[in-house]
Each structure stands twice: as C-alpha cells, then as structure tokens.
Length: 440
Image 1 (tube, rainbow, N blue to C red):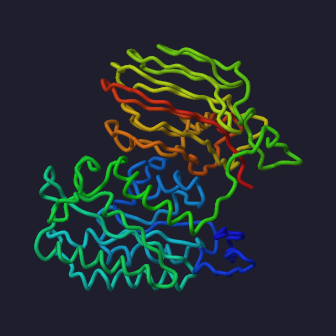
Image 2: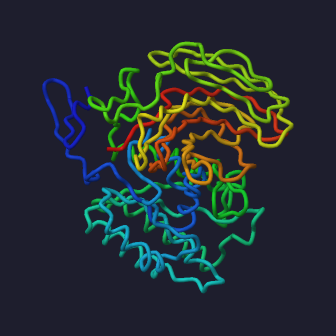
Image 3: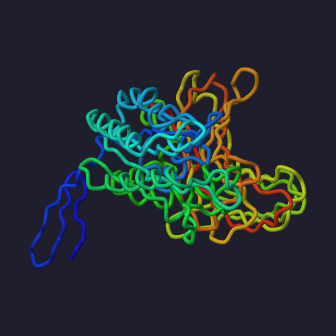
C-alpha cells in the first residue's frame, strides 16, 4: 500500500484493495543535463579543470550519485555579477543550451551598497525574466533561495536596514516559486543561518575567507544535503558505474566499456607503500602515502553486502606539508586510446561519520601525454588547503569533467584523500569502481 509502482513519466500509486491512482509528475526535465546560472557562489565551484567543493554544483553531483550531467561549460556564472548583469551576459547562453534544467542562485550582489543597491522590485523583475526565458526554452527551473550574509567575524558583509529588508523580500519571492509550474525551490537558509540572529547572520563555521561564500563544509550542508532530495525527485537514478568486471572496453563489442582492468577491485595482490602504510590492496591497485610523517595508514579490501571496496583507515597527526593518501589504479593501456578520445572518469567512495583532519577526497584523471607535462581533471577538489571536511557519513559518486586526451599515451585514474598538516587525523574511507570510459 502506498508503493510507487512506476515513476516516470507517469507514477502509479497502489492504494490497496485493487485501487490505483495515476499521477503525472509536473514538469520533469526533458533530459538529464542541468546547467547553472548565477554569481560567484556558483562560479567558485569550477576552476583549473576541476569541480571545486565550495560551489553550488559539485556536492549536488556527488550526493545525487551523478543523476544529472553538468560539465564545466555548463556553468554560466561570474563573480560579482548582479541579476541585471546575469540577464545581459549569461542568460542568452543558458537559454540557448539544450539542457533540460537550470539551477539559479542570484541576487546577493544586488544588495551591495558600494555598487548602489538595487531595489527588491528590480531584483525580482530580473529573476522573473530569468525564470520566464528559461521556461520558454523548455527548461525546468530550480531556484536556490537566497542565503544568509555576514556574521560576527565578518561584520562588513552584514546587511542592515533597507538592503536587509530587500534581501528577505527577494528570498520570500524565491520561496513562492515552488507554486509556479515548471519551478522548484531549494532553501539553504536553515542550514546556513545563525538561528539566533536577528540580522540575517550565517554560521561562521560554514564560512571562511568571508561571510558570503560558504566553504566546502558549508556547501555540503547548504547546497548538497538540502538540494539532493529535490534533484532526486527530478532526475531518476541511472547507471554510472560498471556492474562487474565483464563491463570492460572492447574495440568491437563494447566501445563504452571500462578502459581499466579490475574496476570492481577484486583480489588482494596490489601494492601498499609509503611512510606509515601497511596492509593489502586489490589487484592492480597501488595505495601510497605522501608526506605522511606522523600518520598510520592501514589498507584492506573489504566486502559490504554486494559491494567490494578498498578501505583506508587513517590515524595520527601529519607533521609534513601536503599529506595525502593516494589510491592509484593501473594506467589505462595505450592501445585502447587515441588522441582526441573523450574520457569520462568515475568512482564510488564513502567516508564514515566523525572523521577529523580531512581536507578533501577527490578523483583525478591524469593524461600523461599532454604537451609540456601532464594534464589533470578532477572532481570535488579542495577550494583551500585549510578547509575542513563535513563530519557526516558520506556516500557518493565522483565523476571528473569530460576531457579529450592529447595523445595515445596512458591515462591514470587516482583517488586522493588530502589531509591537514598538524591536525589530528582519524578517518575510514572506502573506494570502488574506479575507472574511465570513452564518450562515444
């Protein structure tokens, strides 16, 4: 009773006793691609060929298990832009995109006194243009409602008087868009706000260099955790990872098969190396510590349910700069690749709750054939070397931005746990299904 029998495009709900109700979900995206439109809070999520963990998009990708496509070129955002500048500069490109949905976070720069603050009515008028043009181009619109600004550490970022009132009125308008056909709203305020503040303050723990842009810690809660349930209703789950070691590349029969061997991390004949490291690793895997003085790292293949993982347990206090634990999979054979091939790299990872001393967990694809050295693409890379990680248990899929390789040389997948120097580390991290496919 109450079971969802089918989901998309039509949902049939079993009411019991032979009765059924058919619901048509409203305005699901026409495809699984989502773009993002906005200001620095979105723009800071990309940089140097990476999805960076402090922007709006990266944690949403990970926590929905890559239920939607969004690549670096799908970010239409510039630091400091007002809604008027977004309409003039970025909206035409967003409208022209073939994506099925657009995530919008904009308006906070309209309140900047130094620029001459816009009125709430002007901001709402611009947001209305954004909404209407995106909808007219066939896109589902997902608004991130406005976020709290300023705190006791960064008092200059606070809004007061008329600008604060306008900020809150814009937020109320954004929340009302959940009643508009074709629009959905994600509301991060409760996650990020200082609940006791009467001046719209945020919690300093979620912010770093200023009180406008959340760190990766704040982005995880304010964008990822609150937003993933909304996006999971719009984008049904889809297969990203291989299901077994049978799903490997074949030039005739499986062009999109996994290019690396043993993606399911079977066996235990891999290599564990580096200061403080011990244990075993899956076949073809090298787990290596870097700058690890003061650390103890214990490695072991483990099985949980139907899933096989390489588990890394870290303890101690690293005293050297740049401490890391690297999970390297054997390089993809050169014979499988040609210059210009587009690569899609991925892995599943999880980290147990209560970790300390972790800076980030990131997936990197390294193209050794790039001119002048190697080219890397990464997902969920750190935004700052001092950022701390969320303490929640996390399970998700990492997926690097797609890229064309420079030559037929090898491409290497690497999962990295980056730690904080002189901070006590305690974490249990697991990784599986690491590899890459050609994009055909």
